Image 1 (cartoon, rainbow over the protein chains, first blue to last red):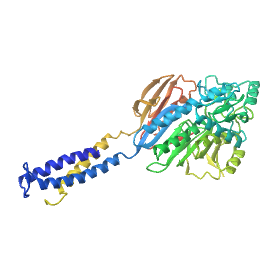
Image 2 (cartoon, rainbow over the protein chains, first blue to last red; image 1 turned 90 degrees about the vertical axis):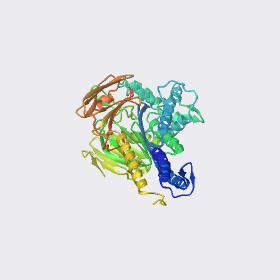
Image 3 (tube, rainbow over the protein chains, first blue to last red; image 1 turned 60 degrees about the vertical axis):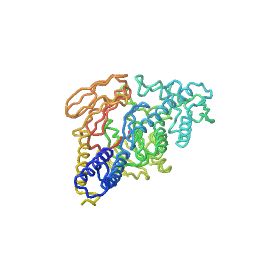
Image 4 (cartoon, rainbow over the protein chains, first blue to last red; image 1 turned 180 degrees about the horizontal axis):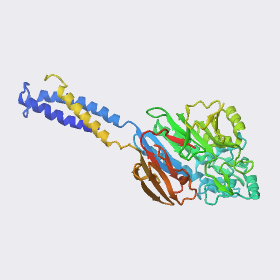
Length: 372
Length: 122
């Protein structure tokens, strides 16, 4: 628009100004029938308007909202990034796809697949990021006393959540798999990893880790404002021109499009673990996908969702699962003593927040009640 | 008059150009009245249908999703995907709401004015 403006003005000024001067010119210097003084004046004017045009042109190049919706990690990736073009959207998506390719449990040849099929032998990871994510997961597993367990892959596979073969496993099979689900026997030495008999599953951490990876790519690209959601894990970077990013907290008892509250976030991630995801019903009983590492069965403790806000996406992903497994009482205590900002929702529609959960929080669904 | 760098005619001319620019910009904006259902398959926009008109739209890739627009809402009327998560979403109508079928990499998002949130965690 600015270019159009300047180009038109250029033509208009030269043509019009020198043209009119030709008729009753009082100046003394003429060249080719046109007044030179008027031409100089016209040039000054052109410079002025060209400057105005450039200012407009630059305004047109200011970062604008670019958005996309794509699929990876078995979920939808929705991005809104304030940038000059959409290259960062593609770059972010490629980053997530690359992480999926190395962290997928089912993709043959991925780091995690090779580790799970190594029969106790060392495996050299091709992706330093996978090694980093696994290292982070093991640290958090230790910190949460195994409430989050990245070595639970065998048990999760036996349940078959989200697949056509989802069913309740045999008790004997569960006991055998639980005995093998020892995260403490996983050894990482540089890029060589040994998991023993454990089956690694980074499903509860990969989405959050991906957000941390995007933070780095967007730092490098100089992006200031963006919102990226990898499924239910959301990274709010900077803000929006009209304020902060608003993230809905899903209503665990409603449909996937319902949210019970609105959370305002800036420069932080949020993840939620809920009992409504990827479950199935067998014999009239609903089995959800959050497994208690003690029993091998879905957690039944009255919680229906836990959301965690943190600068690190990996931590939000891992802690939301761990706190869900711990239950309301122990989870609140653990979160408060470790400065984790969390929101617990119970099946009797009560909302509990940790002391540090000081975010703008607007309750939309008044069936729920904020406690404490 | 002749000595002035900027004449009244320049101001009028500038005003006209600016007005034309604003008009072009205004008409180039997408019509956001009432909401539009944007159908995507693997991230590519396949169709944009107004919510006011009842319609059906099918997307087939790994699986098939049949979407139905009725009375200003979109829902999945039929799917052969393994988890039926898209069907369980029910009918959506609010700006920003979406139905996603991850197995088929298909989605429909309502675009328009007045969305309450930018994303949902859950």
